[in-house]
Length: 207
Length: 207
DNA sequence: ATCTTTCTGTTGCAATTGCAACTTTTTAAA
DNA sequence: TTTAAAAAGTTGCAATTGCAACAGAAAGAT
Image (cartoon, rainbow over all chains, first blue to last red; front, side, top):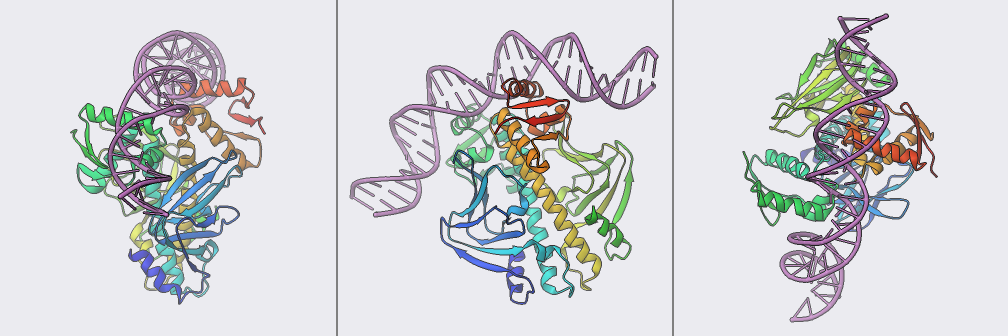
C-alpha cells in the first residue's frame, strides 16, 4: 500500500525515532504494559492480539494484517489482564513513538507531515474495522450476527457471493459466539434457503 | 479540551475549507450518504448516530459527546441502511474535509499541522472508545458484559465506586442486551454480593 | 507416507436470554 | 401543579445459546 510505502521511504530522512524490526512466527512483538507511547504498524505478515486473563485463559482479542496499526495507545488502561501481540507468520513491524507524531516538529519537516497523514489514514481504516465489528457484535442473535456480517462482506465485494476471510472457527471468535451454536445456525440458514455455502464461500440467496 | 481549542484558534488562519455550524436539539447534523470526505467534530453538546433499517426501525448506533470525532469515513460502506446523526442537545459542530487533512499542503502551513495532530489525537480517543465497547460486547453473558464494563470504569476512575455515564436503559443498549434481562442480572449481582448500587452509582465489592 | 493437529460438523441438555406485559417511580413539559 | 413521558423494576415463559463430548475431514509436519 502506498501509505506505508511512503512512510518507509521517508524513514531515512526522518528526525523521529522510528525502528523497523523483523519477527519470525510465534514471537512476541510487544506487550501492552506501560507502552502507551508506542505505536506499531505491520509492514507485512500477520499477528494476533492476545489476552491472558487472571485464570491464565488465552483469548484472541484482535487479528492484525499487513498495514494494520496497533498499540497500547488504542486501548483503555486496564489493570486486570495482560495484552500481548504475537506474530502468526514471519513479519516486519514499524515502531513509532506517539509523542513524535503528536508533538509538532519545530522544523515542519517533510517526514513529520508524511507520518501524520499516513497514520491518520491507517487509523481511519482501523476505525472502519472496529465499527464493522461493533455493528456485528451488537446484534442479539447468532442469526442476525451472521447475516449482518455477510451483508457487509457482500457490500464490500459488490457481490452476493464472497469468501470468508476466516476459518469457521475464527468466524465464531470474531462474532463472539459458541462455535457449535454458530454451526447450527449456519445450517438453519442453509436449510431455510437464506444462503448457500461451499467451503468458506458464501452466497446470499435473499432479496 | 486543548486539542479542539487549538484547532478552533487556527481556523481563521487556515487554508482549509472548514465550517462551524450551530444546531438546536433534534436537528439532523449529517447523514452518512456519499459524504465519505466529511469529518465532523463536536465542539460542544451531544448527538446520536441513528440507524433506520429497512423496516423503519430506529436504533441508536453510537452516542457522541464534546470533542468526539465522527463521519461516514469511519464507517464501512453499507447499502442496506441509512445512518443519521441527530443532535440530542444544542450543539456546535466543526465540518472538515478529509482530503484537506490527508493531502499534503504544499506550503507546510501551520494550520495543516495543527489539524493533523489534533485529529490524530481525537481519532486515538475514538479508537479507545471503540475497543472498550468491543471488549464488552465480546463477552458472552450479560453478567460478564456488566462486570467487564464495570471493571473498565473502575480502572478509569481509580476507584471501586463510580457513576454510570448512562441511564440503565441506555446501558442496556450499550451492552446490546435486553433491558429486563440486564436488570435481572444486575439484581443477581447485588443479591450475590458482587456489587452494590444506589441510583446509577455502582460499587464493586469483590477482590 | 504416516502421524498429528486443527478444523468441521453434530447432538442432547441445561442455562441464559429475549420477549411481552405489567406496575411503580422519576423526570420533564405544559 | 397537574399531566405526560421516560426510566426503573418485575415476572412467566418460550426460544436461543453455550457447554460438553463426540466423529470425521482436511491440512501441516516429520
